[in-house]
Image 1 (cartoon, rainbow, N blue to C red):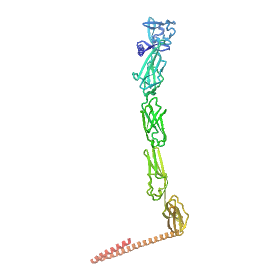
Image 2 (image 1 turned 90 degrees about the vertical axis):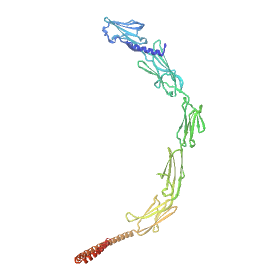
Image 3 (image 1 turned 60 degrees about the vertical axis):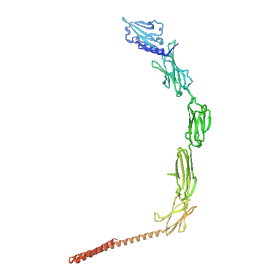
Image 4 (image 1 turned 135 degrees about the vertical axis):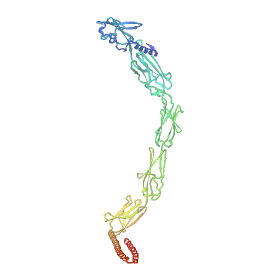
Length: 567
């Protein structure tokens, strides 16, 4: 075998191209396969041909006869080199060349005798072979960042024309620049077969980003076939330049556990670290984490980690422990007297903003309760809920307001059937007062306090009664009395009232009628008087004047009586 440089490879490719455009017909065959070389491409009919002869160019202007066939005779092969590999097609006189070799890359000429004419048809033969495969060998185990290192060798064996190898990183071609990328290629030609083996060596300067990069080599054959090697990856080594500290969880609560994790960007990564815990130095071997358990408010502060072999390379993070402490000045059961005041104080200590809500007997209040003048309605279970994000605290107390029972109202209402009287005793007080009734000094069964203020009894009074309502608890008592008339007396009085009302109505009607009659009589008298006065005025003027004055007096009298009648 002998070596060819990359420039030689290019010269071979150019030579092949020139052969294809030299004006001769060119036939391309595949290495090791049977090649058919045409004769005249059907321009001459077989029955017109008297003699067909094939010859080939031996170089230096010399030709060698290969075979001859006369009309109606068998083929005669004269060349010993091709004796076992050539034949001629009977239909079109094409030359059939089996087991094609690179030595067959020459000009074959078909010479035919037609009548008195001799014609020649030269054909140029080119033999191609795709590389047997691509493989990266001599791979380096690791690449050091910033240093030009031999990465590997890509080999394309037994090809024609020689393969042109391209290196790729993550499917992108690498271009030699003499600094970060260097590519050296060489071609070896087999003395036995004439096939070429191309070897390409890649030297590469790695970066951090190349840690997971995939390197391949490929070749694009002249007949269109593309071969790509299997990808290879390399370990990229570099010193640690930066470290970071990760805190988990980032916002711990009191009582949580917090894990500190130190991360270095070196490869291989460091395995031992120093953790600085608020002035305390803890060395951790073969691990990059440290856990703080049951954190408290005092855990809040700055934390650091550094490399053991380079303490100046460090990272720091602040830890803030979230806490929520709630204290209420009241707790348990609080007993107070009505009308008293009760002081309530809520103290909140928290690491962030809080929200406060209050409930009384599970009913939400609009604001914090104030007890300046206690009433019975203030009694109940109070709960305060304080929240800060996901953190929540609840405190509470029960308030009991006590007082002497007081009768707010004692009244009576008729029953629905008007045959009974319902007595109502409205009571206020705590502890629960006992309510009892007394009629004309005789006690009835006592009645219990039923979470309300109103107590009722129903009586059928056949005579006038004096009814008492008495309420009592451990603090004091109260009594109130009401007079209840009998039902018969009530009915009699109702009828008497109705009769008196009727008499009064009749009297008013009689007075009005009398006044109206009087008015009519006076009016009639006045009319008669006026008639006589007019008759007399016709006789003398004095009577006329006198009559006029009397007429005015009479009108005034009538008007006065009319006003009385209206009243």
